[in-house]
Length: 337
Image: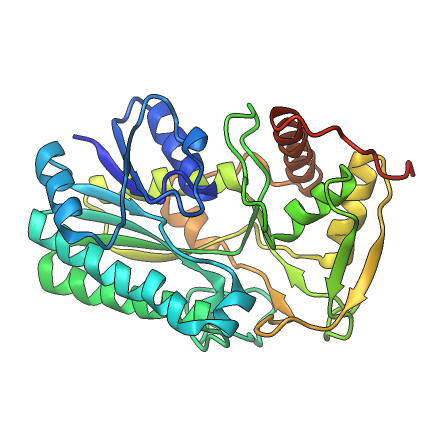
């Protein structure tokens, strides 16, 4: 029976779909293509264009394919945008997850892996966050995801739905074989923005806030390669198939890099320079978010393959170059270092 992957034409969902089909799994992708890209979906997967909140559609898919398992990625993720338009995020992330859960429970789905976020922790006091850290999100994005976590836990207890909630830290990089990557034209992810600047696809990069309580004054994040994260989803599904208990797990490497460190890495790996300017803090950005991945490593059969910032940046740069070539955009090389 196939695995349903919602948001499987998006950045992380497409990589998870790739990881599944590489293992011979049948995959049905449900994506409305509002931000996802059709070409990101593996050719071995079936793409259904539609809204995850369309309960009739989800019910038909579950019944027609005998679906018992789902990976739920479909969501909006931009922190600053959630502050500006919170109701949009509660609709996209919370209300639509509720609709998916209802259709899944009614259709007999037995296992669910959910895409959550470290934003549920808010402004943490700990250096490295365990899953037991206080949950105090400081932006609507984090709150919308935490509400979804609560719904999933409640539905699991009431209806026998086995679940793994994966709380992502900062996802970056691209498929090492160039089959998928981040395609959003207005992305706010630092590594992507810096790579675009390095290739001359942006005039430069702004650092939002240089007065945080961090070693160099810029935000610190735990960057995890998207392919390693995709493998964590496969490992979570394998855990549930073996009868494992429902879990909540942090997904990161356990160390952070500052904005300045990421920018310098992109410049060094790309052997280029580009303009960097200062800008005010963005609303909703905590100073530091670093995972304690102990529970992930000990509970699941998961070992990262790309735990290296240079590797992450190098593959992200290669993906951006492919995008530029596919779009016929000449590469404007930034100043050589």
